[in-house]
Length: 539
Image 1 (cartoon, rainbow, N blue to C red):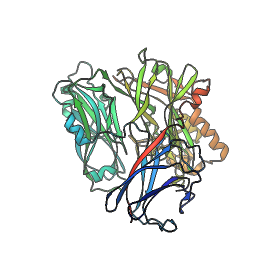
Image 2: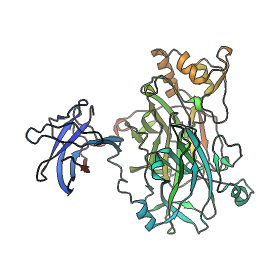
Image 3: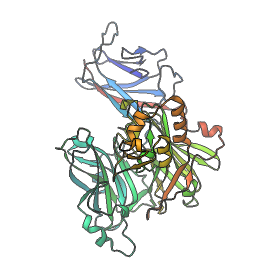
Image 4: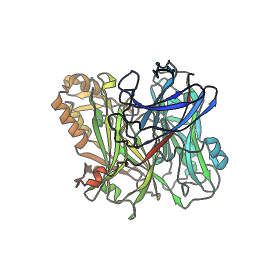
């Protein structure tokens, strides 16, 4: 509650409602705001104990001491219901079970997306899904293969997640769809058909499967996300009898062995082909280079960067590409993220920015204005982490929600075929040397490495050295922070037709800061937010 902008609706006998602008100073009764900036527009009883009310407020009231500015950041809407004394107005403490938290982006243009049932009545549906009995592993990535419907070309107009039973949704962290391409001169049916209908552990499978032939990243759903719809004149191509791979991240923190669920995509299709075809671009850290992303224990505001460099974006068409949606993605230690854009020595406004990142509220966010990325542009993803919650443990790059990632997923048009993944990562040897480690060994898919050299550390885990043997004094932290954010990195640029890692070096470009680039992302104070809320009131 501390620092929260709080509105109080009071329901008096006879259904009369008043609304008060208050603010939180701690876990005590909210204080009445000197400036009443929330305004009650309408209210209505729905049934005996249910009331709805509609209120409005400027996005930026200018009252920074007692109001929270409403931006495109994720905000947390806290709610509670309880009683008050009608003669004095004194608020009583709400009871257990009558409070909650809802992450929300008030300025999301897709707030009114139709439901799955509505979309199913409007469009054809392809539902690639698999039933899975989870292992007792905390984190499992399952790769499954599917064949597209044997129908003429369709356009995908949107997608969402399906999980049965729905109470097991909490075990699904993300779901990705990749398009597969058979080796040159090979029949796709002969190459992929033996794998259709089967599931494979993406990292530890004893059976070889064609993962590296399925690198064209089409789209993703992540925790807290909803249905994503493309603009009405855009679609993603779906050809008949193509092969696809889904990658599902399952989370089983209590290592249960009784979880069975069916997981897959609801993919909405139309036979009315649209004039513009869309693609997805992955920008960020290569998390398979696990300890290249190392966040020290007990860190606050620790920043890591990853770059999509100019040589990679030079492969874009001369007219550039137009970004209409961005998903920022990190894990439990992520606190803030932004995707910066540089062009010809000038920093442009961020493509996306969230100063209140919420791991449980990740979505493909439609941009309020389409943003163009031109050949030669430099993109940088910045992730700010906090590891205090881990109680003295470090964080490494990896697949688990307790490990970390730093990625931005961009949906754009027109679709191109020569750039699908673009990013960078720190030189692993430099990271090891900073920690006093010379040589390590990692098993397949393992995040934490085992030290081989120097001999006096042999057999220890890399994380043990970081957490227990490093002296994280302030000067050491500052030196490592400078390296993690500004140090030179290895760049990679993956065409959609195959893996072609470049070992070129990259870092922040030299820029000329302008007033417009520093402040251009701010939303003006003239906007008004209108909020409708339905609450069960304790009358």
